Length: 287
Image (cartoon, rainbow, N blue to C red; front, side, top):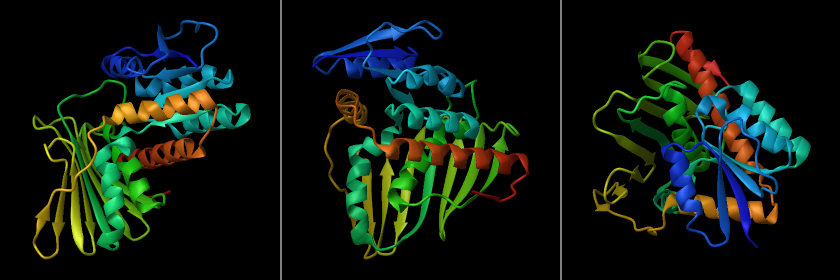
């Protein structure tokens, strides 16, 4: 069975999506300009526009019952995220939010290792580069990665956040955010002002510490409490290929998985609360 897909947004990441989709057999992709009427007979659509436009771009497709992939974040306000959630529930449409690190083989390997490492004590996440965006703050660029992985690791949603802008005022270009998942802190450093890019998550546990560093050659490093250092192995499959494979299967079968919307909503709520904390000069916000 062939799949006819629309793609709204043809920037750098949109082109990555298109190239990956066309690597699958029996998949056709039509690039749709923002505001243009979609061609008839679409089996699914992918939204890769600027973050702040995700809701208004995706909603007509969701309302029409078309399987919809939305690049992270699902939206940049809780109001818009709820609109997407309500439309999906009303129409039964598949909504798939693109949190790509949940499909990274190194991260999947990390999840398999964690049960043997004892209780998680804290997470420290770093997402920094020198590629500012005009449509949102640095929080919406980097925190969806940190939070989606934290949700997968800790299997619960954050209860509070305290955040501080390091640069850029209330629309930060560099910030530090501290989320509390029960008694486990998740501290995130995000920046668009670093000439040295970094995408790293440190998972400190009772008996060992595991570092997932997407910019290093080995990706995974395990530091045991006895002082030994090992480098766990993982498959060489590309995260975007794995993510698109799951979306294509869902679009083909029509099977909806509520975890995508649940994760997307949790991420949006947490980042919106971090923004509020920054506006209130670092006041703790309960979620």
